[in-house]
Amino acid sequence: MWLALCVVLLAAGGGALAVPLVRAATSGEPAVTQSRQLLACVERPGDTYCQRLADDRAARGPLSNIDRDTAIRFAQRLRAAFEDELGAQCRTELESCVFAVPPTAETLRAALIEAGFTGPVVRPTRLYDPAPFGTIVYGVRAGAGCLVGWVEGGVGAGPQATGRRSDGTCLSA
Image (cartoon, rainbow, N blue to C red; front, side, top):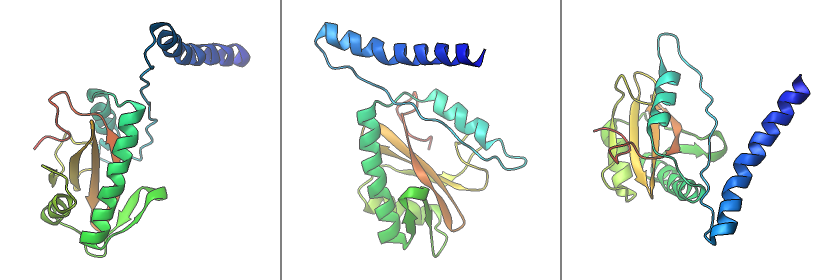
């Protein structure tokens, strides 16, 4: 039974890859591929963060691989702003930043503006935000996509590259 299931999954995965490639080969246009991300989440007692995060991701437009790569370059700029402007220690491989002094929404916003991000939304988390309760959530445009992250006390979760919301924003003001 497991072998049959694996064969079905491999066939489905191969088909999902082959169809765009065949379309591109027959149309003469390059295939636009969209990346998929797996979501791992640790939920706190009494907080529905994981469900809110999944709902938020489902409501956003997809990112192509090119758009995701562009957003990742913006994330490097964002982490550099946290380091330069706020004295954070950011570890790319852990996708987190540790701040010597816990930033406020105002200091985070100022650092993002100083780094050249226009119109960043930085505020306390609301009931429907893709961040744990009690944190400061931020969203900035990153090319065709967005970077959304949060900070709690002296620790910031790494910015996640996402598509834009249906209204074109990264985070509601």
